[in-house]
Image (cartoon, rainbow, N blue to C red; front, side, top):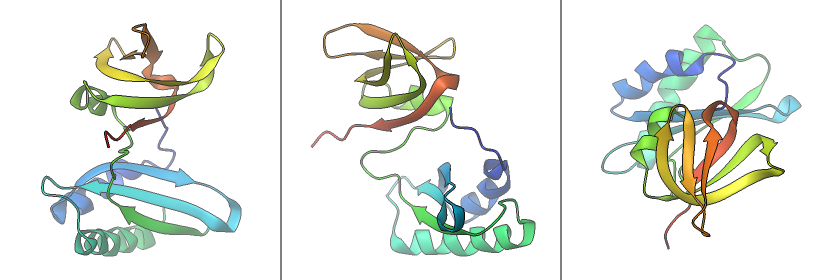
Length: 152
């Protein structure tokens, strides 16, 4: 899975839960002076603009004091959306039975991108069933990005 080079989850999770939200995950996209720190939050009844604002206020204050991320970056607080990213092992269990698309860090049998029905997690392997019925086991620690595929 994606590494957290700055250990931001441990730092930010208490601030996010104090506002009544769940910390879904964190993405850091370095790009010189245009780096982006994206914090995904969720609530059982959905995330409002006010929730994002409250979390942004709490998190930005904490980041200013602790300064865990070097350089300049833009902080963005967002709901996970319909194409929810999957960050942690528990996410692959929680959303079993739903369609996912997964990009691996390195090719597996010449393929980096996979799409199918998420079966869950077995022995640190993400298990999906592709459309042709083939079951594929993907090492969790090699997943670069995983997202739910919205059923529209």
